[in-house]
Image (tube, rainbow, N blue to C red):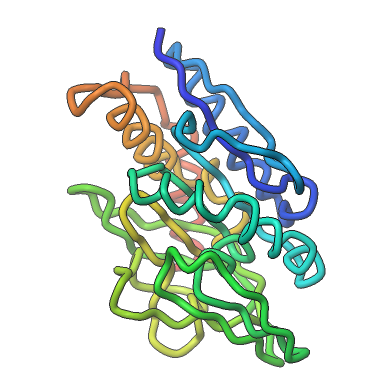
Length: 244
């Protein structure tokens, strides 16, 4: 039986709008395939053996939650997490976690929170919140997928040349409400503003992340066993029909 290990970054401080459901979805879709997914919570002050991790999840949080963990992320986890990302660790980051993987987050109050700098993005807090259902047309391997989610953020995230866009925003504001860009990808890191939670609504992305982690751990020939996903896809299609 294959075994994968997932690091859940700051689950107490960074888990708003149902983001914990992303970890549940990853675990359940592994269980259904006979894959054991071990989950390691990463709390402030913890020492983490990042070389043993296959997946990581970094959820969203309020500005106050981000301020609580930003220094720990940078000083305690920074070197190990950066090295793991460069070694193709599979990581999903949502909203606040996404922002803190960039160069910095300048809050609406003027506080500059340094980021990890692994994503070539920066975020500036705004006065207007971007709230509502969202659809992002994304390319996952050779498959075009319409990802559905719910965004609720005032931070406006802008991309540099070191990342590629996760996809094109069809509904909603996306990263900054200006350029129709929704999320960023660097190596095996995927970041975006889609809460909801994202992965139960989008089994294609869930399986894509698990497959990347399996192939990194067990070699490029490792494949996922197919699952019956009619109910998940029907729910996704119902939402797409409402929004598009």
